[in-house]
Length: 121
Image (cartoon, rainbow, N blue to C red; front, top):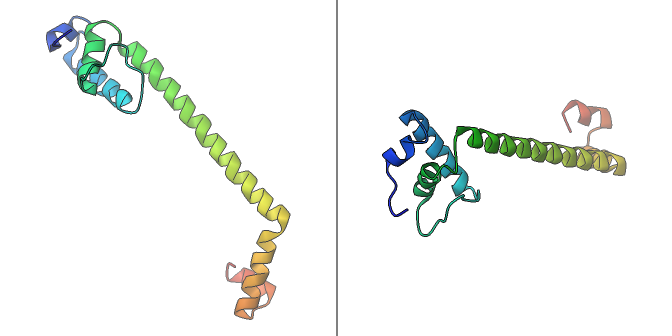
């Protein structure tokens, strides 16, 4: 398709406002690396998104499913990062690094262990 128009897209998405939202969200997905459903040639992401809509390759339901998948992946990534951070803290405590750090602060300041803890070291 050499040129895509709003009229081409409105045949597949009845509401122009929904069309704008759909095209914008899809263009963002393409910018983040999503696989296009049509040939890209040298078109910009917005044109590719509109071409996908005009060629009935994309609708709001498809977009919602794609977004749900992305959200699920982000949640999994966040849980993994949290678990890794938790393991790192556990390893530090198990190795006694935290106690050694606290002892070092005590020596540097000339404070007793209880005084260093009271000050937040």
